Amino acid sequence: MPSLAGNSSGVRAVLIVRLKQLEHALADGRLDAGFELARSTDLRADRRGAELANRLAHALIERGKEHADAGRIPEAVADCEKAQSLAGNLTELAQLRAAVSDATSARMNTDRLRALQFAAAKKQIDAGQLTIAQNLLSEINKDPRSEELNHDLAARQAQLRSAVAKASAALASNDWEAAVDHLAGLCRRFPADDELNRLALEINKHAATLISTNIESGRLDLASLHLSHLDRLDRSSAAIAPLRRTLHDCRTAFDLIAQGNAAQAIEILRRAALLWPDAAWLNSASTQLKQLSDGIEELRSGPLGLIAHHPASFDPHETLPMPQTSKPANRHVLPPPANKGQQNGRFVLHVDGVGSYQVIDQPVVTIGPIGSTARADVAILAGAGVPPITITRTDGDYFLQSRQPVQVNEKPATAKLLCSGDKIAIGPRAQIVFRRPSAASGTAILDLTTARLSRGDIRQVILLDREILIGPGSTAHVRCDALSQTGVLQQNGGNLFLRSADSIQIDGRPATSPAAVTPGSHVQMGTLSFVIGKD
Image: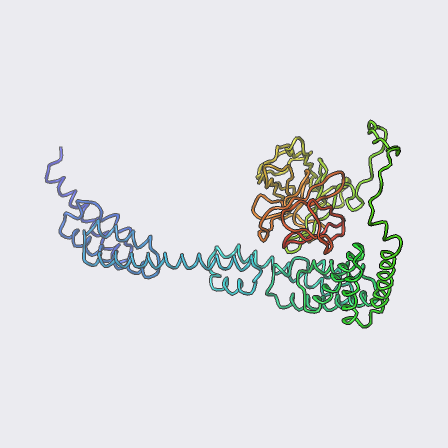
């Protein structure tokens, strides 16, 4: 067996080698490698080893200070722990811990400020203040989290610039109505855009000239129609206010005539004639009303007026007609024709300041690419190889079916019972999100997140089942937080009726709830206005 002296000399030789390795690690600045050598107890028990471990601890403290100054908090904390394990609680180590604490507080303050900047930028993007949002994002552009906001900002700017360019071209070709269609809802979404505001003012001037000509020539029907279309722009000018007031006065005068109050109607028309000297029909209408008023007055004061003082006598021999009994329904009688504005259960709902929606009330809806052999109910801009899908409503549930597998929540499927929030990808750039905002309603929403229709203004499809909820909150099918309560647009017998606790106006006339809504009519519900258009 080897002697004890031989074993001791061998251990000493190994220790000397490790001490040399630690010296070289310190000299080369390889502090982490030196720490792995110095952490062993037998090395630090040696006098030379203890001295080297103390030097390594100070070197780690110095490096920790550099990490703290650069904001690398985890690295600075790691060096603190290593230095403490080698040399205990040194004065320099306490100073480093204080520096790390200060750097941590500074980092937290920076992160909090950065979060506030992100929130402010997102708020400005949602409010349409794109220039302000761009300035805020430029301050935090180096942060990786700003990439998504920059992408959203660029998309909205591209959408706005594209719509403004199309509207400018339409106005240049004297098609102001098409220009309004391109800008519908954008003025409220982007209130601070100078180019958009300038173009909206030009459209208002052009429309004001046309409406004024209609009023002077007596075509109040065209004037009202043009004004309703202009309201979709959601940016009125000072020139439109007197035109709107004149049409309102004319409508009031007509209602007064229907009520037999010709005198007050004459007063309104004579005031209008002062403001519109070139509208000769106003003076003519006032003259005719004066003649009518005088004629009615003569009739009331003549012999016919005497009968009003005595009630009609009751004839006991008069035979009263019996009420007709209802006949049983004939199953062979054809149903009444559907509303002409809703062809095959389809129409477009234009909500000012909110957006446009394609509405389909069929229980079976096909979604596929434009130009495919079978015509899709919802035709999207996608490649010809994209498989069409079918969404069927049965007893309040919606089922997806497809001949080829499509991605539903990133999993291939050919059939699935849809739940609110399901993501359907029928192509690489055609993703749709299925939503059921209200559990009490069978109506569903298809959000076209990346899919595109041929009409760029439509971003949502409403699968109608009896009613559409229009109001504040996430349970509404058409969300408008400016409203205080929800209105219901309900389908009954091929016609649409609006029920709301807010005031309702149809083409500027007050209407009682439920109010019948016809295609092309301008509907005002509280502070919200919308139009039903053809698909």
